[in-house]
Length: 415
Ligand code: C6P
Image 1 (cartoon, rainbow, N blue to C red):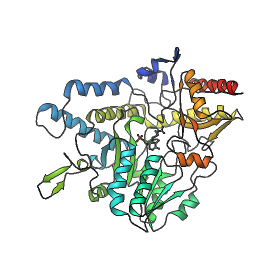
Image 2 (image 1 turned 180 degrees about the vertical axis):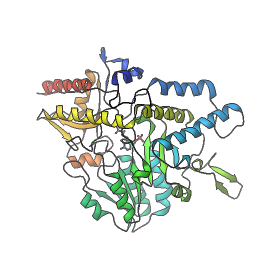
Image 3 (image 1 turned 120 degrees about the horizontal axis):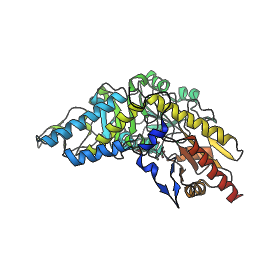
């Protein structure tokens, strides 16, 4: 059992592990960091693991027989094992390191979609997809002639599952769904959607960018064919993301990028591919970032992902309750905390989300304002932008109170 493993997270102790939380912003306000959906902060041990790699065993991987290269290669390969175990994959063969979730989406869209799709085929997405998936499949649709359809979002911010059952047909080749919406906070019924895809012979891709950092995820339990997430949203570094793919599918797929390390044998006439996952990891990879991600995973495992999820749910519930006290705050997404992730997007009557974020900033409160890379969803909601507070393991209810104080300030200023 890890140091922190218990029902509730020891937030005071956790905060000490994140050096950035000590800093002040503006004219001396303590930082209240509520922009974790965009990227989370990093604990000392992740920063140290990256520095230790550069200080003591920096070398390229899979290219040298000298000791440093061997040490770096082992750490890089073991990072794949750590990720595989964390998300319940069968082994490192199923874990491809990418730059981020976006690159993982593009990898499947290009390596699979471009080769397999054609006129008459359908790709089904949802109206709450992030641009990383929406724009990517839209482009693949344009290039291949495949139709791209969208499962509608209901007024209470959930997927219309009756419409989903109609939209997914035997012509559907891929169902790509966000596991936890970065705007509505909705936790989608991922396993049911995977089953729906499989009932029609389609593959299922889950975008887990907001899910893996905040709750236990087991790709085998979900049955997903592909699953993607980013290291930087889970206390790890930027520059590293993960594509999980079922081994047999990755074996069949063409590579996405060509070059060094992804090959087995090259002649002037032809090339054969390396084993998984290296077949999809061309060129010098993000070694330091892989080391940092493995450390972040160990850290989260010590906290316990069930405890992380409960903490997120408690904060979301508190924020929803507090915001519900005010008639001039419109909340997007499910208003009950069930099946909801730890983020709340909202608008204050008469105040543009950017102005609100700017007033928050004056209070030392960091939130995101804009369309959160879900423009079509915002169109559907009838707003150009929203403000979004998103929580992580170090956030407290006091910080949500600070957010509400800043909202009050904005209310007075714009009254
Ligand atoms: N959402 C947010 O503030 P990248 O940028 O590739 O690491 O992740 C893309 C991505 C894909 N899917 C979902 C559900 C996401 O939330 C994100 C990233 C950030 O909401 C930046 S737009």
